[in-house]
Image (cartoon, rainbow, N blue to C red):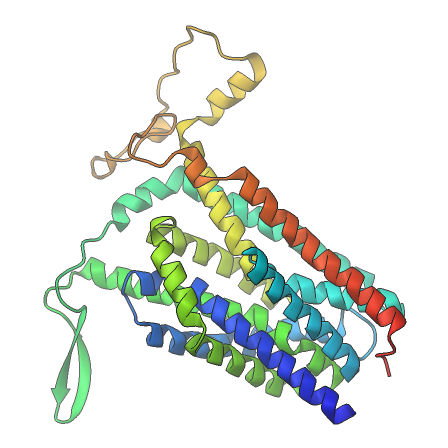
Length: 395
């Protein structure tokens, strides 16, 4: 019976890692593949390598938190399989509703339900985790909102890139040994942007490995069924398989949707969300990369949509209302542009070439996504509590 549970547990862990690889590869390297900077095969290889690196280094802290600190008892194999079942359920909900449900939050919810059912929940650790769950999305939103409102147009001017004809790199040979050289048609800016796009994708893959490896194997490691290093290798291997197989579809989806999320916007979202999750993983907090990335997208869109209104004007209208014949205030010096940035519309002015605010920020969709983020771990915690209260899986 124990051997059967171990096989089931390993199978579920591989399933979770496989799906994480399929979804995270598109998020990490979709911009690079969509801009034809690298191929899908190259993206899968980089995803596999950097996810392993993230899991092997920073990800161990998250494994320790989820596998032994949330509850003050050792997992059994039965408990491990039960918790991993709820992680798989989160992936199913995510696919059915088209919302990036958090496997991290669902897994923690399942472990919390187990802790309440057995009276072993470490409330201090749980309070710290939930506090960061509230802080991280808000921080992600406002960081990207500030970037979208004040910096994005200027970055967009600089980031505009005309791709040269032909490949970026050419291969020469010394004897039978090929080596790459930069094409004569390529510019230094083009080379820099290409390296930046791929580098940010690798950073995102590292962050995904750091945060998600624990989702697949932390309960099994906590039960002592497998060692920590073996668990990291198992999860990273499953993520790699997902990257080379089902990730091709997510890469197509993200790459083809870059008209809605421009390359520059995608890179900003990746840098901010990956930095937040890497930091949280470093301090051992299991958090959702999907949640942070989504809130970055929402914040960036909201920031860009509010460029047509100055904060001082909005505050004045809120306090005393706008008069019918009230003239606009003179432009503040903070909005002065250099000669190179004259095509950027100043804050408080309409730009006929930009998208409408409703295209950049949709409050109803945001409310639906946030609602499911709250609902998914709540259902997981309640179902886990009922399962471990009435089914003897602690033996």
